[in-house]
Image 1: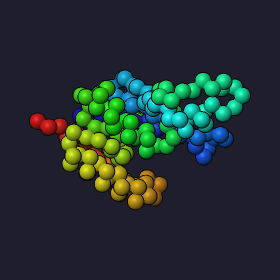
Image 2: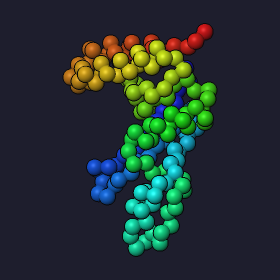
Image 3: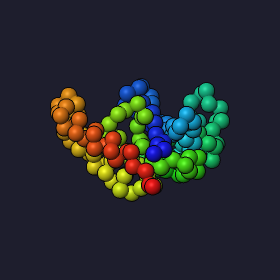
Length: 150
């Protein structure tokens, strides 16, 4: 199964002055930064300050997004355009060997099962609280992710 991963970087609440988040889709050795057209409100905010000289203009493409939901919405569109061969779009990282939120799939039952397993993993408390249940969840998840339509 060909998988794409959405990486959302969000320092809001962690880094002083951070108000934006960013998104990148990674798939089979290729990655794209997600771009968002600036609104008037965005420009008004970004053009505040002595060092901007009013450079930002409405419609200009930027990597800045106002919240993770905007990143996810843009990723759902970009995934179909840039990676049509991919079968699933997962929010997370390929280096994580456990269920992560699946945003889209060519196979609805794969997405449904994946997201059920993700919710179970979250509810059980993870590896520190329930290693046996996490092992069972991850075993089931491996089977779900091996699905191919043949």
